[in-house]
Image (tube, rainbow, N blue to C red; front, side, top):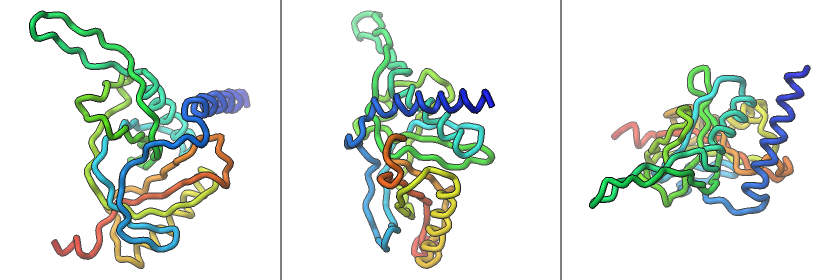
Length: 216
């Protein structure tokens, strides 16, 4: 009982930090994509290449999401190290220091084996060379290539039950459109934990290929 109480307190602290840092109603930069086709709440999108900071976490659906978010939030809040540089005319090193990185959307969560991969999209102004390196070795930076994603948008809670329901509906849409999955489903969250449940924007995303791709 005590461990559950402590976990609840930690979640409240985490939510408060997130709320203060992002600000409810504040517009966040999002991963760039083009809508190829739309059917109600379902879309086929083409995402541009982008960089993510990611971490892999053990645990159940909810706890993994919270733990992964905390690690990544620490990274963009300053728990990182700038690369050292040397002046060309003298061996004087520039001291590495923390750098704050703007919050973006969405925060994504996807299964990888028996674990969960949590990822933040990095602001488009950065490259792998200009992003500060994470201090935590469990946080990695990765370039994501352009890809097509089937998507369904919904409001409500971030529960695993709600996620599974929407994933099943998205898979039915994919069957109708003859789209084959190319990877694991992703839960994308666009709002702070303080957003009222009925105002939240959530999505399930699945990388796909279509019948035209299969003939190439």
